[in-house]
Image 1 (cartoon, rainbow, N blue to C red):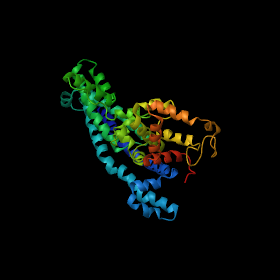
Image 2: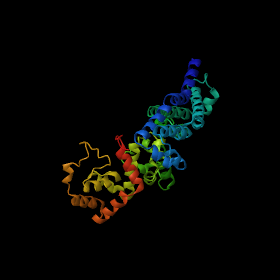
Image 3: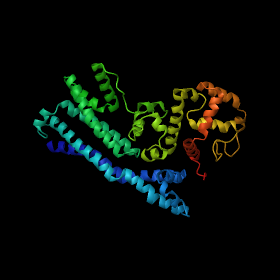
Image 4: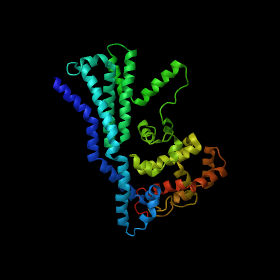
Length: 382
């Protein structure tokens, strides 16, 4: 029995390490290839070089053969960038610390489940609620690792977050166990460990503020990003928070290629989120009114210019109907009434709306994301 429990403890302790080894051998290179294919498919290698390797751009651009340029881009620039952010040296500290912390935690649990196999003295020193709180947090963390593994997003930051969760949730479970001392406290402690850390943190912070009569704490970091459609899920927001993007303004001014490179969001999703953030930065919650007009971001807003000019939305002219012709249905749109309706929703005059659209139409960042959006799924663009 003792040997079986020890084998189980070792197996559970090894899960974070084993998942990283499987990810590095089977998934990491696939993620690299997917990123690279997206860059080439959307012709973003040129933008990537200008933004991230400006000093080498001209020398790279002068290579006459496109195939040689692609090869040099992959080997000398992209692969090095990818390795610099996903190398073993980046994973080693968090994976090692998480594994050590897991081993200590499961030894605490073993000492309570079977003192003879663990340590009877330790079972007296370490509260039972602390051990079971750790167990709950560990299983919740394993689910996160598995999810990130399948979505190609098992980064060093994930392990740092899980390490913090194991410590924080275990401590929270201990505090709850001290407050509720009955036969159900181990189950309650296990449940606290399973609970999402953001909600546990907010609950404790709120109760502490109430008890001290202090101001309400700030709450979840990056909670303001929930105003952007597509970031309602806290797990998606945390991917941005881990990169230091905690506000709508930070998202609106973020480097699209950097977000694409360091998250698992598709390039179109990255562009869409930044596009929505830019519009929200200017008009705030009024964007909800604009959605009734089919406008959810700057791309749709400046697209009104194309509609009013009776031209196709993107340079390629590709549309659901096919061809380069402007649909007769859109030719009948009353441009003056459309501008009036949108201006009314924003609480602006028609001239104010036109000036706003003009500034956005020629904004360099918006031009870039507008072009990327237009290229998506249209490989014929050059």
